[in-house]
Amino acid sequence: MIVTIDGPAGAGKSSIARQVADRLRFEFLDTGAMYRAVTLGALREQIDLDDTEALVEYARGTTLRWEDYRIYLNGEDVTDEIRTTAVTNAIHYLADLPAVRRQLSLQQRQIAEGRDIVTEGRDQGAEVFPDAECKIFLTASPKERARRRQQQLAQMGRHLSLDEVLEKQNQRDAEDRGRPLGALRPADDAVVIESDGMSSDEVLERALEIVEQAIEAQKVKDC
Ligand code: DC
Image (cartoon, rainbow, N blue to C red; front, side, top):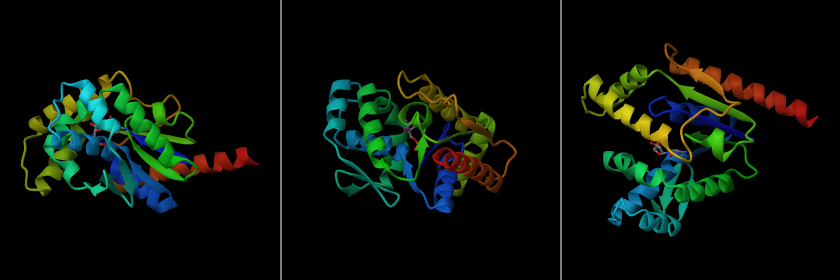
């Protein structure tokens, strides 16, 4: 069974998706990590980010592996390195390219094939897994997401004003929503969780409830 969890940056998808997978003993796939890893590789190779052909060629020549919640780029574990601001700022150059998206989407389908898996990203329910048995779109208001992000950054010793965080977030939202292929949007059959005012435990319980309903519906279908 495939469970997709999509939503904008800062909605808390990653933590919820991991916990849902854990509780149900499903596997977990972080598709953002795949886009991040290929971007890190392109930066390391100093590829001109405006040279779309070179980016597509680079992406075609790379091997990504996802194992035990770690992402490997050409065999090297880059899980920690992909979280830098430089990578985050450059992702859109690759994520905007349909050829790169098709390649990564194909790999995502191969990883999920025949598995019970929770897959998290932007386009999982609407484009990569249109037939997924359970689709969740997790979101929150821009201000709430920025406030949470500001707290996370402060815990890491980076103190930014709410306006600064909000400005960066608005830019990422615009990039994620404006993509010609793989744009951030809820699938028509996704259940939306709008998490303003909810604790993370409440969000987790709501997500589990949605997945459990889908599991029950699937059992009835299989009968
Ligand atoms: O989930 P994240 O913030 O780690 O994702 C990083 C970026 O990767 C995000 O800004 C957009 C891109 N991405 C994407 O285009 N499609 C996905 N399925 C997942 C992420």
